[in-house]
Amino acid sequence: PLQPFSAQYFLKNSKLFSYSEHNLAAAQASREARAGRRGFIPHALPPAPAENWRAVSLEQVYGFFAGPCEFLVRNRLATGLRLAEMPEPEDREPFALDGLQQYRLRQDILDACLKGRDADTLFEYFKASGKLPPGAGARSQYQVLVRESAAFAEAVRRFLQGPPEQPQEVLIEFDEPRLSISGRLNSLYGDRQVFFRCASITAKDRIRAWLQHLALHCAGTSKTTILLGRDETVAYAPL
Image (cartoon, rainbow, N blue to C red; front, side, top):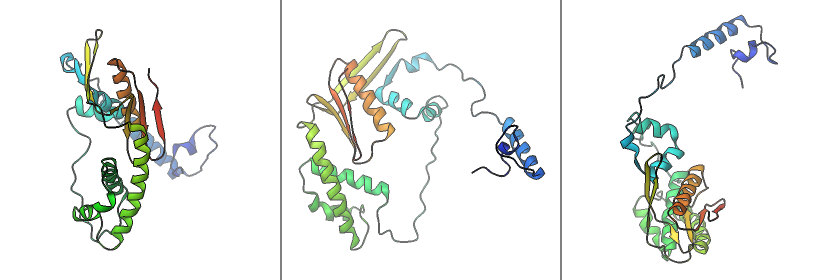
């Protein structure tokens, strides 16, 4: 909803209107303040040394597309956007896992399932490691996560086609501009490249899978790339 001092109330031909002189004055003051505000980078940056970008990693390419603004600040301004903060201790004993804790535990259980281990026997290990909340409710929460992870592991196995192949090193070179991109592909299974995460697929998951799909084919290997999440499965056909 608009604030009562929004400029939309005082524009010509606007469907919104107001007769408040005080709100008009506030809208004008807000507009003047914004007009005098300078941008985050008000001037053009000096050209980056070309030799610094002749050879880049596949992970750097991913970082650029996944977060262009953060990449700019980190690599051109040599600073960081995130402040390392020490979380305040909670004043109560947690008896339930939050979303991030559930995700991490699902990933651990999924890894155990794919290695052929019985996840039910790992309850005491996860509890002793502090990954489960104290109390009698820990086992019931763990059993729910085991069911979810085991079901997802079955879906993943259908795409893996056995153990992973040896990682493939890739080097992609361009003549104009003179540039090389290098990286390692670790998720090759038979005629497929498979990525999976026991969570919903995000935009960053899609970017990473697509970039590695392109890198694989630029290196001369033709495979289908599969991206599995709890909510959907995405497939990129050979190029």
